[in-house]
Length: 190
Image (cartoon, rainbow, N blue to C red; front, side, top):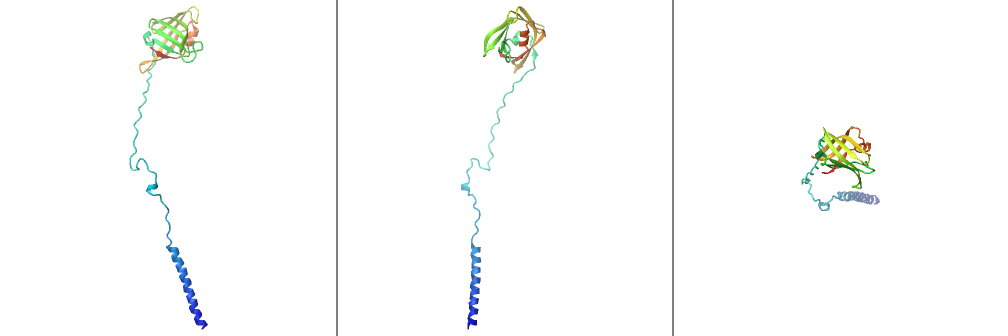
C-alpha cells in the first residue's frame, strides 16, 4: 500500500512544482516593461518664434561716410590758407603753436596754453611770388628782421582745408621758426 500511495504523492508533488515554476514564469512575463519617460509638449519651454518660421532679418546698418583726403597741392594764394592752423605737440615754448594767416598779408604765430592763446611768438608780413611765401618779421623770438621762404602744401578733406605742410626753399634766418614749421599743421577755422 505504501508503494501505491507514494507514486500519486510524488506525481502530485511534481505537478505542483511544475505549476509553480510555470506560474512564476507567467508572472514574470506578465510584468509590464516600463518605457522611458519623454517630455510632454506642455513641459517644453515655449519659444517666441515657432521653429517653422523664418527669423526676421535686421535692417542693414547705415554705412559711416568715409572722409576723402585729396592729394596735397601747392598753395598759391593767401585765400587758400587764410585762417588758424594748429601744430601737433609742444612746438612753441613747450605748447602747441597756432599759425594765423590773414588776407591782409600779415601772419601771427602764437603759443597755445590749454587751448587758448597764451602769448604771441611773432608776427609779420607775408608776400607771395611764384608760389613762394616770404615770411618777414621784426622782433619776436628771433632778434632783428628775419626772412623765411617757403612753399606751402595744402591737403583738403571733403573739399575743405585740412592739413598744411611747409617746405623751406632756402634756410630760414630764424632757425626756431624753421624748426616749428617742420610739422604738419591742422586747420582750425576759416
